[in-house]
Image (tube, rainbow, N blue to C red; front, top):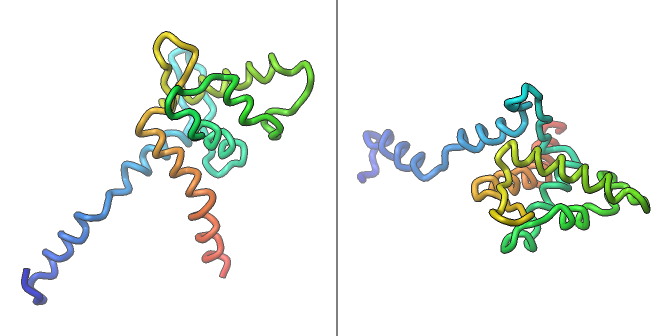
Length: 152
């Protein structure tokens, strides 16, 4: 291409072709941040990517130990033990297990996790792995920078 003013429109097309379109990422993020209705008419609570509890759960699901074999209810309970989400008490194992089961169902309804066939294990779906890691980086890196710029 020549380096003239007449070719500016072509430079714009070429440079914008290299930039990924953020609309699909925003659409996926909006999908998990809005309440969802299931067949029975019940609504399922949405996720808040900026909340501390949801961040802990996202990090537990994105743990490297889950990538090969997937994860079980017990694995998530062990990673979340001692957090405000799962308070430690001697007889609460059944309640904690039920709470994690409800969380896993919520993730499944939103399409973030899928069942491993013929097992009690779950795995993150490929596209949703990127979405959860983007939500974590949004909270830890992008949001503080934008907040600091807005307060100046």
